[in-house]
Image 1: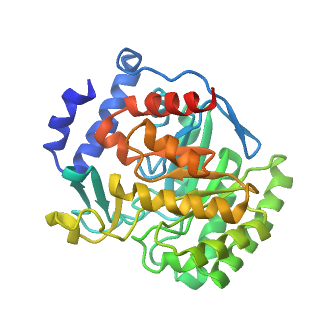
Image 2: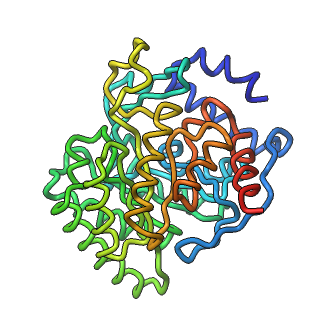
Length: 340
């Protein structure tokens, strides 16, 4: 079905197509039609960070920034869903156009800039949803918050989402918020993780439950930077790491006219770069905390490659745009076969 719909969707502006797809999926879910078109994967439980994931294939943050489509997305068979990135205050993001398809290379460039309705609106949507599966909430800072005060924004979001999240992701690696990636630096990251870990401990006591903290890193890091990040993640007892966000590199798409557009590149050209970071991170961490692999997973073999490099779980985003919902069950099947 998706192969029939895709040419129609690709005839639309990418951001328009994004909203049309999600709204259409929501309608199909309400009418009870999604099970007719979507084959849910078999159960393949994984216990990671103290949480039991029904299967190891999740949805990456960015597709559902405001948590408005949780029930429909759950019907696609994901083992977990991550929503956001959400900021303390609503913000429109960067000027349009800000989303570009590079179809010849199965890639996307985005410079959305954390466009979202704010953390309170996301929580209202989460509370309305019937979804009770594993929910990650991805948090960030507002674009106009100085980088020196970034921790305050993360703390606001952490306090608000803690009771409703299965885990919380700190997005410090988007290339579309000015200076955000500075938070991956040694001193900045050390201070941020210290503040958030102290707050996590307080919130665990208040709410009577422990919600894991996960950090999402960029693919544009050298091995020395990865080693430094791994050391800080271990020092502060962070619960997991997502590798990776989008890349500033244009390797593999230089021949396409859209390559000069500013923003982060995702999709097939990111696959090897992301996998390399996962492999280096796995070596640095030595199994001490789990890695969620994301970046360029376009088929089941790509998912398997991430796990063989050191990931425990994987997430999809751009691959869904090009392959459709079938990619979820295909990736699950590939990972299930690996363990048999």
